[in-house]
Amino acid sequence: MSPGVSGGVPRWLPTARSTHYRQRRPPRWIHLPRCSGADEGGDEQPSSSPASQLTATLRRKQGQIKALLDDMGMEALEERLQGAGETPAHPPYRLSTLIQDSLLRPAGRPVLLLEVSRAAAPESAEAVGKLAAQYVTWGADAIVVRTDLEDTPGGMADLFAVIRAVKGRPVLIRDWMLHPIQVVEAKEAGAAGVLGTIASVLGNGTAIMSSYAASLGLDAPVEVVNRTEIKAMEQAGVPFFGINLAVKLSLALPNFSTDMAKGLLGDLPFGASSLVGARNKDEAVKARLAGADAILIKQEMLAEAPNGVKALMQDLMYALSGDD
Ligand SMILES: O=C(O)c1ccccc1NCC(=O)[C@H](O)[C@H](O)COP(=O)(O)O
Image (tube, rainbow, N blue to C red; front, side, top):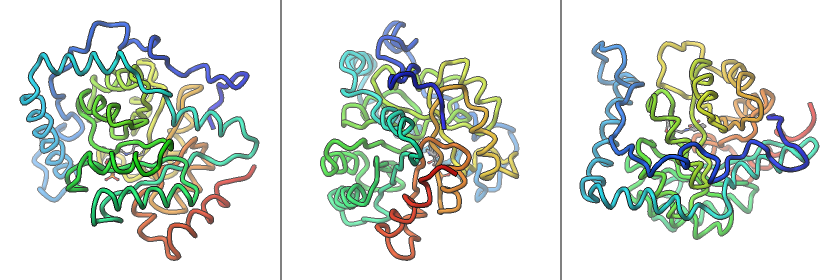
């Protein structure tokens, strides 16, 4: 787990004033980024390959965001971006704070984030909210809601419903994060953070997304796949890293696995926090042994829980606790 806590005060936590984004003028990054992770190489990809699927997903998402920005207009966009910075989330960094609290507990377990989506509660946004509330009673520390329109017809409505339903528990949005306006929307909805800031997709825009989110008091783990990305993010002051074991972005990583996650976790900067996505119990246990501060229990694991999510949570809380 991450060291770096002194006297109960997490020293690395960015404050709304300390982030380099905040010190600059109002955000000017209003162009959509080039999708570097998907387009690199120039080779034609078979249309069913993970890379071409990712390219298609990112193009779709870019189209949606462009439509939103065109509709909003430049002036309104600047106002929204600046206005959000003037009223940061309160309390800020709620997931990071949970992590810091758990690090202070002897033999504590990683913070557990449970994912909810229409895959598990197809009826309505309210049904998604109800499911999230159940997950909290069964031990979820925080909830992650998928809002991409590929995953739900409700979009942000699902996020609103979950935030209403779990009152006070940190809720993070999971989507493809390509533009700061998405961070603003998450913050305005009352989310504690955003998942889906991916270093290999955003390239040079990653640091600015991370620091803009931090300037709003949101946690925004940056997803990394190798040491080069970790180094670049470290230099940019990124405090929170994500590792997706199911990553399909970098096809040049044939052995990307829990062993790779272990290596990456060991390379994170001193004091940084980590979130690892797990699709089964084995991945969750390995992530914990490798030092993950928080584990995202993905919908695949929840859907396949043989005795239901309540029993899975009991099992996980036992398996992920302790001093071994
Ligand atoms: O999905 C994860 O495991 C994950 C872990 C830590 C931080 C962020 C994470 N996901 C955010 C994403 O946006 C995903 O990379 C993206 O949706 C692709 O997910 P998948 O289809 O499960 O590979």
